Image 1 (cartoon, one colour):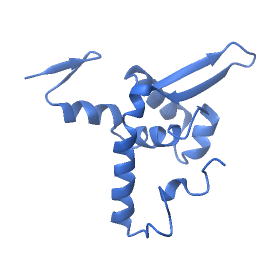
Image 2: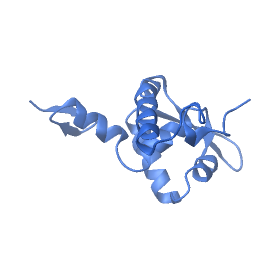
Image 3: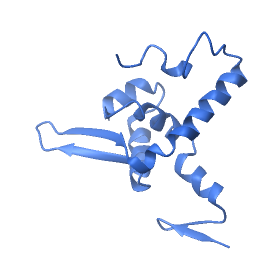
Image 4: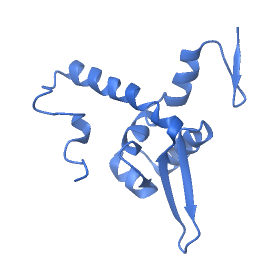
Length: 125
């Protein structure tokens, strides 16, 4: 049986989930947005190696899938902020599980790095 969502056809729910969060940058974008609202330049700084064109494309796809919200403020110059939607927040346990698995895979000591090691030192006070 085939399923259609946003003009795309999927043959199983896992395929649909991977389409939404799959790739090199989408999971990392979501992971960083789970900390809170970010501007484009903040995301670009936190994701070394991503170029502006790719970040824009990935953010648009995440927005189209309903997991990221883009807010444009009518200012000069325009200010644009990105945030995870409530529906997107349902992905947080999956992202945390991926972080835990990656921590175990890399042999990182959980006691030495509570939470995700990629976020240590970035936590808000």
